[in-house]
Amino acid sequence: MSSRISYDFIIAGMGCAGLSLAMHLINSKVKFEKILILDKELKNINDRTWCFWTKEKNDWYNSIIFNKWDSFIFKSNDFEKKIKLSPYFYCMIKGIDFYSYCIDAIKKDKRFEIVTDSILNIKSENDLGILTCSNQTYQSKFIFNSALRTQQIKSNHINYLQHFKGWLIEAPDYVFDLNNPVFMDFSVEQKNDCRFIYLIPHSKHRALIEYTGFSPNIIDDDEYNHELNNYIKNNLSIKDYRIIETEKGSIPMAESKFINNFGKNVINVGTAGGSSKPSTGFTFYFIQKNCQDIIYQLEKNANKIIAPSRSKKYLFYDSVLLNVINNKKTSPKKIFVDLFKKNLPINLLAFLNEETTFIKDLKIMNSVEKLVFIKSAFKVFFKN
Ligand SMILES: Cc1cc2nc3c(=O)[nH]c(=O)nc-3n(C[C@H](O)[C@H](O)[C@H](O)COP(=O)(O)OP(=O)(O)OC[C@H]3O[C@@H](n4cnc5c(N)ncnc54)[C@H](O)[C@@H]3O)c2cc1C
Image (cartoon, rainbow, N blue to C red; front, side, top):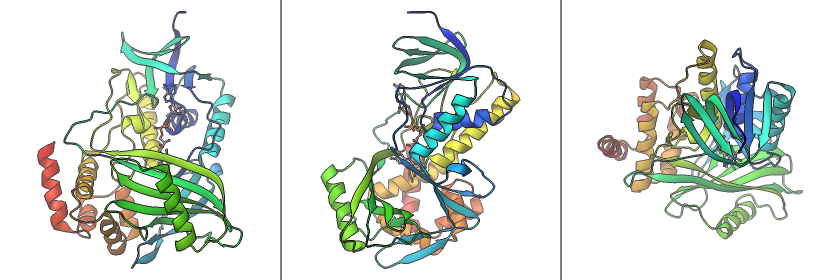
């Protein structure tokens, strides 16, 4: 094996977190001469859609935002509401647009080197991060890792997944409401579980429709297909449609923490760094916030960095909600209906983005079945 090649920083993984960090670095005042960014894939496939809500002042990725809405629909069997989001906007970015946009910018910046290879190992040694691929070993003061994930699974911890399958369909005889995506439609059968539909209009006749569940395990492909077809035919009354693209995945919703086994010179980012919110699976927004935090630290001192961590308060709330869902003393559908029925959208969206004061948190808590949540809160408190 040849000797190690040195860089100022190494970004391991060119998914959402790795590419976001590269973009934040390019637009920052952090001083660096050489950054290695690597992934086993070329990132040239449209494998996901990112949605998030943000206030206008965040001008992240404006040029590739596919669409941006100031309202969305929340639905259940007996309740439907158009939620005005101001001052937030609900934004949607196609995976492939994000990958291409970031990779183009990285290629234009001569300080970056892109390598396509499989990472075999990452570790810290003699105050350096060491990354080993099949043909080469690299080193730098810090490795920002989103490629290798290790999770500390404790037997009494809840490990759920937000799992989903989506079809981008074209329906020539149906007109989708371009002004209103459907954030959650709980009018589907719950199957003693938490199931909902998520609908993003792309054009008058095209929409991404995702069947989503929160549960410990994913479901069979046949069941996803059946439920999607059922929703399209029976709920939307679409007779004739064509599937253009498919998107499938799962996001960890877990009390079990993602941990850093790689030592102090490795900073885990993205899902590997705990950026997926355990109660919702939303990650994109938290990745951007964590990138801002890393840049802030590097601009002050490029030799010292503390891995961004989730707020203990919201980790506790997330655990409580996961326990409530798991206990099945109330239905997740009822919890989400209560949250959307009884709260001001601005407060709820800020709460889900982890940007509320304790007073606002109390208002949110007051909107759900208190006894069930209090029991779970005790359980979580004594579990940890
Ligand atoms: C289909 C889908 C839709 C989603 N939609 C949303 C959404 O709407 N909103 C939201 O907030 N979140 C969403 N998420 C959750 C989250 O935002 C994404 O999973 C996001 O991509 C996580 O970013 P990441 O960088 O941590 O992981 P990834 O984007 O998965 O990046 C990890 C990278 O590491 C690379 N890698 C892995 N192992 C190795 C190895 N051994 N060697 C080299 N490279 C390696 C992979 O190829 C990959 O490119 C979605 C997730 C999925 C799967």
